[in-house]
Length: 616
Image (cartoon, rainbow, N blue to C red; front, side, top):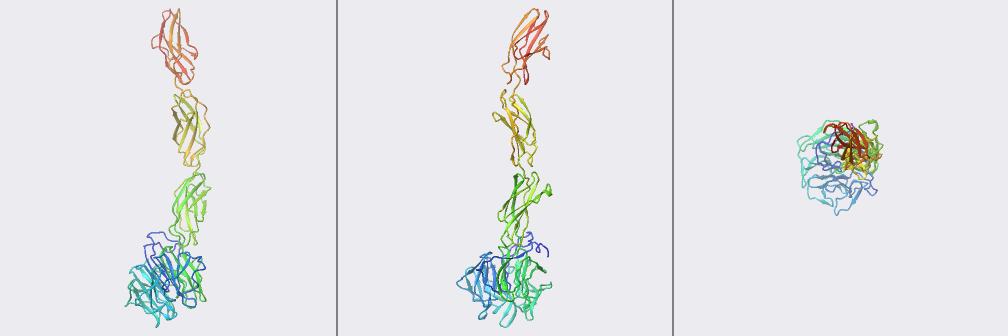
């Protein structure tokens, strides 16, 4: 059999099943298109010692209205009249005001239409009974309805397609029976069938298949011994199936498992040998199912399907020598965890969070497993972490800059369930420090150049920030930039500069501080204050410009020419910053036009006022 248990869940179904007078499925639902469950396994439940005593031939059904499995009666050397409930983890003995008498082999089913548990017949200390009882979650009520003759070992299921309880066969006072009855919630109706139906028998297995909307009947104890035939009931007609069946047996409990959309049968006996086999019916044929663990061989055990926990519950039975009192569940691995999310703004690690799956698979979730997948380099993936219940986990040892997603699975007693993968993330640390390579001062501003850090931290640099000291003026530019301009500075003030790089993980360390630089601009124009001529010499005097541009003047350039505006484009001479007069030679009658320009570290400023003189 495939590791995927049969087929995808297909249609939403609601059904109620009883087999061996003790088996039931109610309101089991499976969403269309949901992923197939993994192979189920039997898991023994840790029921307390205060649970039901060893017994067999008890009646058991899942009560949807109270979300508990209800067990009544059974046999342990004498018939019992106890009512117990199972909540998925513990048994509770109830003390209803009224109760059916001690019975074994009674048929019991959950009526989805009336929301009551219905019990019929059974064998008591006074013999066979034919009473109909209902359980409302608090007490039992005996109904006045008349119907099938007294019997035990009949089977009863709820047909959700027709909204009727279907009862077949059993063992009455006159022997084995093969009649088919319907219960509509208030009265019984005997069907007069004109087509073939299963032969007389009792302790047969019967379940309502919510996928095919048919009642499935298998085996039983007939007039010649154990039977091995399979029949289906479509609401009007019994049809014998030709598919190969499990070996002949009776006393095998059977339910419909909505998780796998298959009918499940366990154990039974042929009168000589007792079985521990598990078989599944998929609507067309039978398959034997192997389980890692399994209940011991038994028959006349009680089994019901818990439609909230989505698992079958099996209790007790008879192993051929003694009654049993163990509780088992037929579980699958858990469903897939939900809302898996990874966050990786951390150095070589990622934090993964998730929500618990909607289905535990029938047994408690023991923990979670998380596995890293490195899509950048598969060989660097495979890191794992595990929890015993927490829904968050931190994976370490990742490679910064690689892209990762993380697969999370829940684990129960059966094993690991379906995986859910997270979003893709990139673990990273903060980038290294950039290196300032040049600071170019200007008028009230500077331009800072840099080279990128040696390490980006594993994720692209998002931005750079350069800060001036003193004052805190700054520039903030995208990660692709290699320079920026800081304005609003004071000319002549010495500034140093430092910077940082930022990526998705945060801001890295600060760079080495630059050398101090002074913003500056060109100096103003000097002012020529006087001109004098003495023979063949012309002397000019001036005073410094009002603004030196923010830095000390280097000197003055003197320009001279024979006509106004015709001064040379190159200075006649350059003078130091502390000289404020200059004498030049001129021939008699020679006209000379003169102006000055101040010079500082930023360059040559505008020219001064122009003066003219004529040599004598």
